[in-house]
Length: 405
Ligand SMILES: Cc1cc2nc3c(=O)[nH]c(=O)nc-3n(C[C@H](O)[C@H](O)[C@H](O)COP(=O)(O)OP(=O)(O)OC[C@H]3O[C@@H](n4cnc5c(N)ncnc54)[C@H](O)[C@@H]3O)c2cc1C
Image 1 (tube, rainbow, N blue to C red):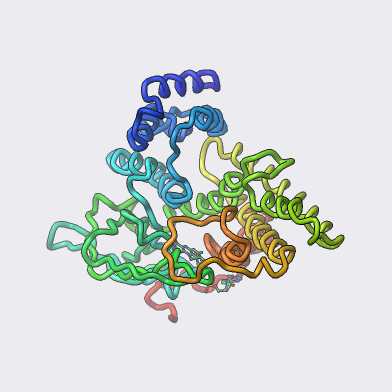
Image 2 (cartoon, rainbow, N blue to C red):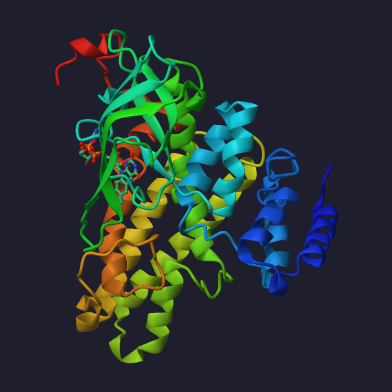
């Protein structure tokens, strides 16, 4: 069994064989993956060592202290947080070998082709069709429209759900694919959002061919596979992102949204009021509770897949991000309303700590929508965590093609 001492030894060996100051960034990341130090809880040969997930922090700390390059998680968050755990769970050996290494090193960026103009919260109602070319080479031919696709403009691959059987109820006729974003028929168009930037896109799929070898899971099993992605997404947004922004000590909150707000408080005594002080303290305590709860959730995740508890984390993260960024704008007065640049830009990620208060305030609005809206997550917590009676669902047993749309 791999323990902390063993991981320290392996990390030292990696650094000795590939000194960061003399090794190219990509070469170092590839070597780290091959040494099993990428995500230590993944299997051997796939970037890990079958070690407890909580020990990842040991490796990360050693590598950071040695000035080793990292894989820019802000840019490849969808691959790391959502595509990878799904491929690990449902992928064939060939798929795992082909996709996980360039996903982790950041050589291949991933995006998520799930939401559609008529299917967001009710994702299982989606209409994008995948039809098998039975007379040809058995490829799937995909037609449809996706929307709100973060990072599609950067992505080489996408996780995609499409309808393969309209004659069965909506949850049963779906299949999950890995879609090549450079394939003919994939068209990506920017969508400008409230921040002025186009972080996400609409994606049109017109006769896109996907080989059957890029199907993930069985035909008709797409909803099951997608649930793994969605549960991991909520943990990735709510449980991992918060502490990553979190770094620093609880006392300083450095590098976290709450830390940025507290720094503003320290730097501007002239703007302080009693009311803002009380609200900042309350937010501080809640942010700390959320951070510790996230830590506990990650420890529970040590082995296995996340459960519905991740929805609670994501809810808390969204609420806090909006309240803290709102506090920050209010505290800074007129300065809080300044905005650096309103031209349409195509960012490579989301920045909750480096950018100005106005950006953080506007970007946080999306936190209660992306990865499942807060209302929908409250339903999940009510039903699957608290065991309350479910919402009435009248369309569960009706063939998708007979549903009103
Ligand atoms: C910043 C950002 C990035 C995103 N990135 C991606 C991405 O990369 N890939 C992707 O596939 N999608 C992405 N999305 C889309 C996101 O997953 C959807 O917007 C979300 O699931 C909601 O769907 P919708 O927009 O269709 O709203 P709707 O589902 O139409 O919801 C409208 C309103 O009705 C409420 N509502 C709906 N159903 C219920 C219910 N049963 N009970 C109570 N209230 C309900 C909702 O809470 C909401 O307030 C992103 C969204 C944002 C904001």
